[in-house]
Image 1 (cartoon, rainbow, N blue to C red):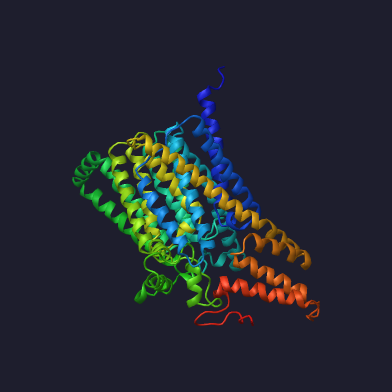
Image 2: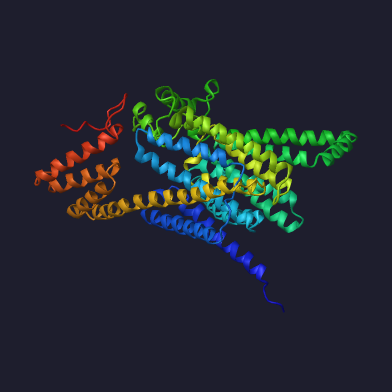
Length: 552
């Protein structure tokens, strides 16, 4: 019996590394938990800094050339516009967080381009993406089973159909994110089914597809549904172009069989009617109702804020990740929920980055189409069916982004970056020595920006987290000391000041609410005032008074 070959060992090692890394990204690090939980912040820092350093070090030692792609110019323009947005932002501290996530997505893009060009197959990457997505499918199905079993326990077997539907979150936090995530993989699944030869593999991926479509349906995400239709439609469009001759022959043969045509047409019509019936039932969710007289009614109150932002600062925008601040000025909380983005990615970019930002996004889109055209003509790693899958995935996200901003979740910036890397890795560009040196230097610089930025954030988050732990134990003296450290390390973070003020206020009062420490009370007022100077929207809006203004 022969042992495992070195090539097989390398493949298994690559598969294991990809599986562990992408599992962490999908389940923890790339979710909102990865942004807010202290332990995950620390691990994300180690992960990004360590993996990035190892990658840069290997490239430097082996004197590798910069992995030039057709998106380079578009990326440079968009990153430059983001820097301008930070400089003129109403809150540069908050904008910097969004910029670091953008930088990480760019680094992931070049990392995967480099990996694929060095021998890691795109097919292996997609295989691992599907394996990891099994976690999301599991949590989604489990969530629906628990919901439905809860209904049965109430209604019994006499009423099997619930009067209102459920919106599945499948561990990702929000139905819109679930829809966007699965829509990025569904076209790839179709490509696998149509491109594979083994029947067992086709059946397995087909089962995955059914579950994924089932979950997308139960997200009740209208933008997500449009994304699904667009993703599948674009895939079959390019698949049809690829199989043009076979399609023509099939249609010619089909036209000779009138009864078959009638049967197929009947099935299609019944299928469409069933689909719209199911969609209408799912829209019975109380917060999914649609007013046909105002089809965009669930978005226009958000879009109008973005439009006002564009009119106020048309050139540079308000700054990355600042839409929520402007929304609070118009709609108080409560009763309206906090909305952090414009529910339209393109409008959100225009509002936060101005004409410069939307122009840079258009430049990136143009560079994408030029690169995609070259990839369609000749690609080193993917066949045209696989390319059709990537086109479908990116098209689905683009359409979904007309009504939501899934890119606010790091995972949904990094996953498209991986797909773009697959697309551009097989398109060779003319290499120049000057561009090679500048490119490698830029990669190292972006890694340094991401690592230092995350490091500074974690540096201040460490005492803040300890302050929260002390607050939970009502040890206010210790909590104040830790919050003081946090505001000294990150004085532009309003939330740190508010927590410092709260802890100081609790320290100033006894159990009966009587003042026992006037110094701490004055310190609390000063801390609140400092926080409100940074984030005045916490204290007022044009419609409602949320918090009384702190006296001078």
